[in-house]
Length: 72
Image (cartoon, rainbow, N blue to C red; front, side, top):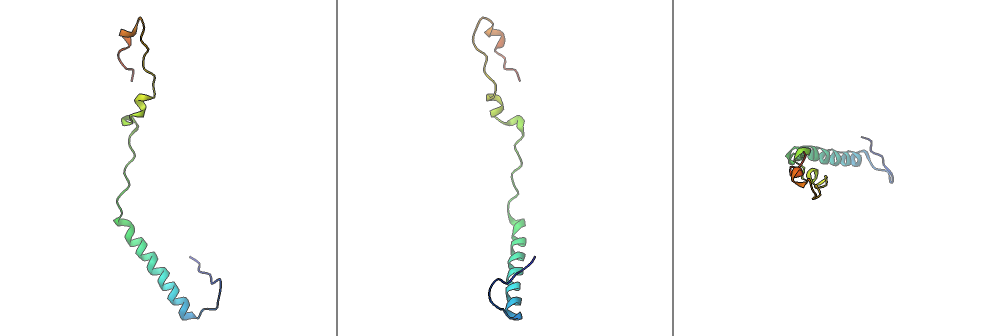
């Protein structure tokens, strides 16, 4: 990590104080990360309801009785 002074002329004590604040915030952010809930696992594609609706339903006709079973 690089810290660059853009404006002004800080003393070594001021730079040390600023660096201490940055390090403390980084340590707090790192310590807080494990407390977050784990991301939900991806839903398997076989249980996706859109997979069923992606196919057209059989159209009624003379052989409709033989197409009553939905092909999987």
